[in-house]
Image (spheres, rainbow, N blue to C red):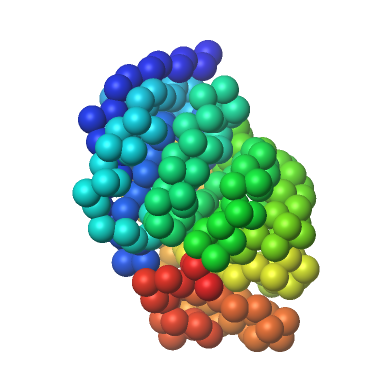
Amino acid sequence: MITVREIPASRALSKSGLPELDYSLNPYLGCLHACRYCFAVDMTSDKDARENWGHSVVVRSNIVEVLRREISRMPRGIVGMSTITDPYQAVEGRYRLSRESLAVLLQNGFRVTIQTKSPLVRRDADILSSHRSTCDVGMTLTSLSGDKSAVIEPGAPSPASRVRALEELSSEKIRTWIFYGPIIRGFNDDRETAESIMEIAVSTGSRVIFDRFSPYRTAMIMMRESGFPVESLRSGMSWWKSVSGMIGEEALRKSVRINSQNEEYMNTSMSGQSRLF
């Protein structure tokens, strides 16, 4: 059973803890994609959304009005939409808070980077196309297998629909990137997956950002409940260096720009505007 609740927001923009972002904006709390690996469960303030992950979402109903008031006194910078929820999960189709917030930010001199798993982002191509120099869209591709995705992202749109969305946005000359991750030992760390993702990056002109699974407490519980052994979730640096090296080889072979937390295997630097290239 899915529950949707509306609450007022006291603020819209929050200072981001990510080095490449100045602010984050989350129109929703909780996420109906129900991803088993998601770190955001432990960072979600709403108790019901946290405890019923994937089945409860909170709509911050007045966030656009709050945003309009806030930006009059805030320094311009880079805004991540969103960082602890998917801004284009299904409820966005009804509430349109991400669309309206995106328009407000871009029309007032902010730069916006979006990360999503939803093809719904294509709906806002009109806004994105009008501000191509100050926005980008990232699509998460954990696996290109629909069967694998169903295990760890049971509520999310299919990988195939995400790839089509990426292709359509790219055809509109909107800047795109791919998040390949989280990478899990024995699940999506193979060369075939990496090569296929690099091919998509080439065809869409996308940068690839990749990272490994982070063993947050609730994510570890959910992943183990999904059948993942602890040894695949707590993999050491030797495995990660090997995987990072393999991904770097595939990226170099196909001339794809990549970013990773593991600086030894980056072929482009992570900077304050790394996603707004």
